[in-house]
Structure formats: C-alpha cells, structure tokens
Image 1 (cartoon, rainbow, N blue to C red):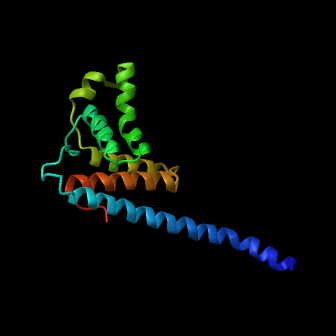
Image 2 (image 1 turned 90 degrees about the horizontal axis):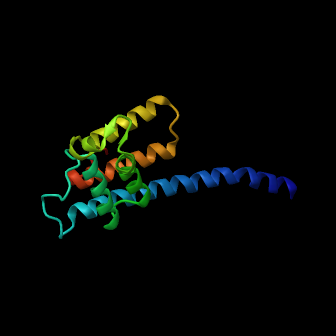
Length: 152
C-alpha cells in the first residue's frame, strides 16, 4: 500500500506536465483560430484599420487598445504593446526616445517584435512562457496584418 502511494506521488509531475502541454497546445490552436476568425470576419474590409508594418509608437499603442476592446488581444498583450508609449507620454522620453519621436517615427512592429524575441532568446534568460507570449502576439499580429500565420 505505501509503495503504491509513493509510485502514485512520483507519477503526478508527469501527469501535470502532460496537462500543461495539452493546455499549451490548446492555447496555440485557440490563438490561431482567433486570428483566422479576425482575418475572415465579414465586417473587415481588405484594408485593415492598422498597418503593423508601418506605424508610430503612438499608433501602436492606439491599435493595441482597439484590438483589446475588440477581444483580439489579451490584457497582457495590450499592456505590452502600450507600455512603452505610456511611459514616454508620462515622462516625455524613455531610453532615448522622445515623445515627438514616438508620435512621428515609423517602424515595422512585427519585425521589431521578432528582433526583440531573437535578442531575448540570445540572452538565454527567457523563460518558455516569455518566448511563448512573444510568439503568440507575433502570430496574432501577422494573422491580422497578412491574413495568415507566416510563423507556421
């Protein structure tokens, strides 16, 4: 009896790992399905409201808020995309970027996020959760922008 209890105890982490893997797989499928739903929405015109390949930091912040309100982005994703501009707006500058630059300089959000992800991975300190969150957000933006998952 006691041996059986010990064996069952040691099997729990494997069971929990399987449950976590199933949850991750389900989340990935769910994110992809949600992105496809957005891209195929009958209320969407071919011209998307936001161009994530050419926008300012202020436009990125606004787009994130709108997409959060529409249920496309999670609160965490919206906070990630609005945080830098919010700090610049509050303090006037951040890390060498002024409010004027944040309102006028255009960049490719998707490419920038991919570069940031590569940097985070290269530093070797990113947790699997951080990497997964980056990939999920990049996937959502790609589906929104291009109508398909280009990371697959």
